Length: 241
Ligand SMILES: [Ca+2]
Ligand SMILES: [Ca+2]
Image 1 (tube, rainbow, N blue to C red):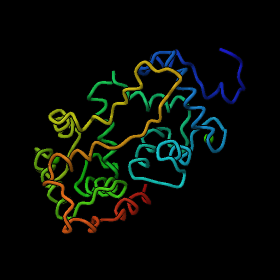
Image 2: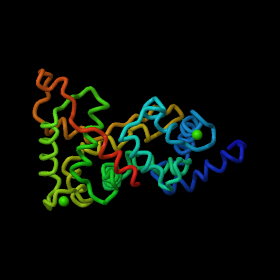
Image 3: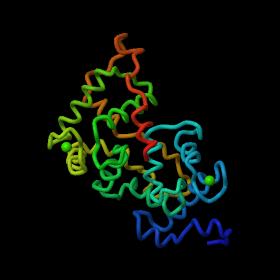
Image 4: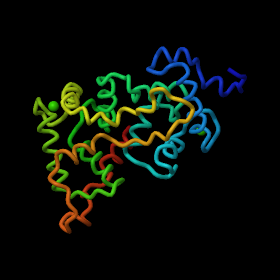
């Protein structure tokens, strides 16, 4: 490898070490470094990806925010220092590798939906995620339909019947509905070359709305009626983090 500045060397870390800790080959880690350099220098070329640079990379705008992107950034930012350096980036992306086991993907998605980080997925969290996804899409569902989706989801997932989904219930649930983890795999992460596509993500939660809701229609009874929930719940909880 050619000589590079000390700042960059610091953040590149040892590709062989990263390869041993993840599902990537050394050559793939080097290819991902190209993507990392692009993302980490998109606003401030400081060798780390800031929250704004992360939003810019995923949503196409540094100002745009989404609940999903916020949670994803929090999960990637395992050191909780507000930035993503190269090693953290590679370890985070490794979960999305096609070779990563389903249990690992399920664990990551559990933490993604466990917005309040209390170790359970609660009804309000699922509702918040559905509303956030709906507000980012053109799909309009009434509050009643969202409640039906929630009922159905908890009926199926909350096998212990205590009104919240624990990690064990979640593993069983996604085991029965593997399509929920579909977006936890980025096929391009296998056999990477330097032509890295944008890694735009959506959440598997939309599966709930497509698979278990009454027929989606565009009649006037649904149209124009936006979901009754705002991001208040999330905003309140976030402040306590
Ligand atoms: Ca940066
Ligand atoms: Ca439960």
